[in-house]
Amino acid sequence: MGRMSEEPGQVGLQTSVEGKSIVLIDGVCHLCQGLVRFIIPRDPKARFMFAPLQSEIAQKLVESNGVILENGSLSTVVVIENGKYYTESAAVLRIALRLRFPWPAAYLFILVPSPLRNVLYRFVARNRYRWFGRDEQCLLPTPDIRRRFL
Image (cartoon, rainbow, N blue to C red; front, side, top):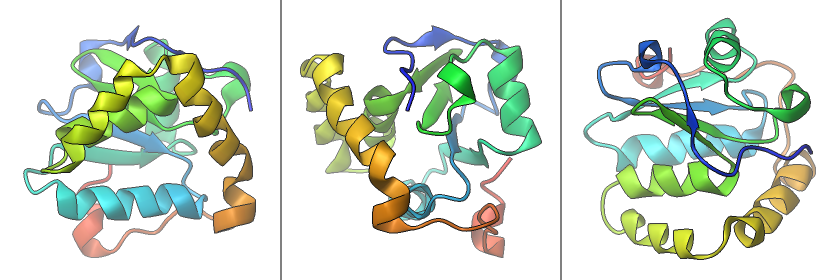
């Protein structure tokens, strides 16, 4: 797994979808698919939109807006919001911050230096297929979830 951006990067305003946060995930990873299924019921205001990193729309967002993914890595979640992007543990904490109570309390982990947080993140990312499994194709969302995908 390559090293990802630690600090928020700048992205173009065209990535904003009506003020929503965009979450880019590895679409074949069961852990990442589980993250989407975790977020949706805890996001009653539908603040998050999703796209698999393997999709054309995600590739356009990544390539045209300067998101730094070393070696085109699918080993990180990317959150794009308010003209900035976040990867690794910073992305996960940004997600927690915008979910309903009690999940925003997890944002306190932002006080832990990112190199320490990302050691754990990278360990899980390296082992996610072995522990959680993977599909041959990207997630096919249910009709209810589909409206949240780009």
